[in-house]
Length: 210
Image (cartoon, rainbow, N blue to C red; front, side, top):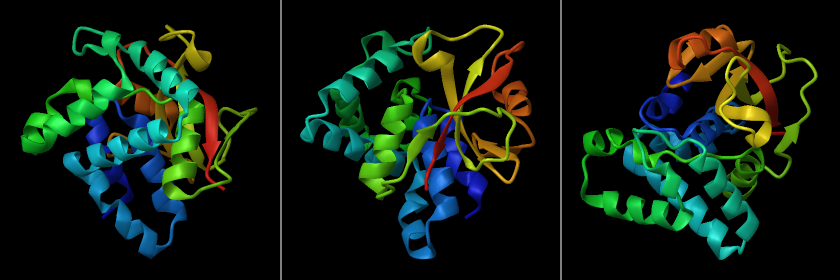
């Protein structure tokens, strides 16, 4: 499996917080742990991964983090989904209901998206993948060489006021950008491929795994 394949499901859903984490994990994990990630290219398996994290979130009593995920996800409400009513519990129920659906049916449903704030991505990496040093880093050089999960904002038309306008997660490795199962040479090249016309993406945060 190639690195690019890990993000292909995000081409149909808004699950970039998870797929970008898988990109980063593929880079830092040994071969034994990598084998646990193969399901990241399958819709049912990725949904199970997301559900497992959300169930753990509730079991651990992380009430504020749960609210932050819900609030941020609602910022993505549009005519293609009903995120205005997004809740973690409802999302878990949707995943449970997906058991009898085909991959094609699941992929066509935009309501499997979920918005992940920076601290939620860090929590996911720490709790699900035992990366205790995962952390949000202050970015001083938006075009720097650091490897990591990068959050981007649209400087031309910010999505919202949440997290400095954060609207998408990608992974940067060796000056290459990975998103939607593709490889790009720059953040703006990725924006030109996957965002609306006129989008001007700039890095607004970086999450390191080590």
